[in-house]
Amino acid sequence: MTKPAALSLPVPRLSASWIGGGIVVLIALAAVFAPILGTVDPMAMSPLNRMKAPSADFWFGTDTYGRDLYSRVLYGGRTSLAVGFAVAILSTVAGLAIGLFAGYFRRVDGIVMRVMDGVMAIPAILLAIAFSALLGGSLGTVIVAISIAEIPRVARLIRGLVLSLRGRMYVEAAILAGVSQPRIIWRHILPNTLAPLIVQATYIFASAMLLEAILSFIGAGIPPTTPSWGNIISEGRAVWQIKFHIILYPAIFLSLAVFAINTFGDGLRDALDQRGMKHQ
Image (tube, one colour):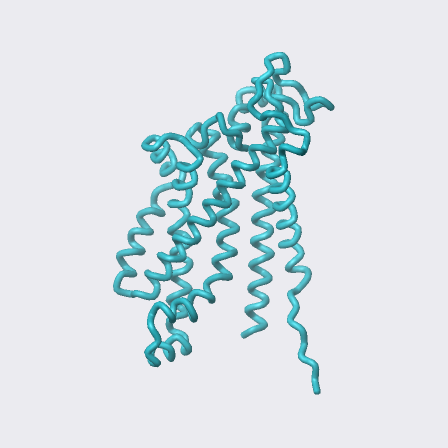
């Protein structure tokens, strides 16, 4: 009796996913456990310690108000990561629902997708600025604005997948057998959209963090009273030529987080594609 071969994922392809995921986890842990990692109040000002260079007393130096940059960078990670995670969840859930609805029910497909095209025509930055002007700058406003800008991209992806899945033989057989439409969507279509949806969510996570930093940099995002990597960079831009360390460390953390998330998404995509090829 022949022993069945075990299903295994290719190690070279998966290694990038593990490395990127590990870096993201480390950054997230540093942000979550910031209070016990030698930090102080990130908003505490000390005029006597303005723009100090990195030292044993101030590991990342201080900013123009004398605030400890090490503490602000770690606490700012909470805000930046929270924005990325919240936007990824909201936009993927909403985009999934819209994409399933538009792709399966062809009568409303044209109307729904034209609305999505109209939303995509508005740059995310302009949309966020408009929301900030109407509702005031806040963490919730930034999350909602960026989520609305990302929803059409997810909806178009899912709609395309649903259109291809709807013509499969097992779906047509279920329709002919009289299976209800909600059950067909839940049992036969939705599971086949999850893999690309998860990969897309990782890219949205990274994109949302960059957009939040851009909005905070131009003063249209999170209020300066809430530390975030974008806010720290924005506050240090006026003196970056003489005190480069003020923008160096938040920029490193932001770049490393975005790079790690994209690397994780690339590795995850390759692993899922390889698994799909083995099951064909």
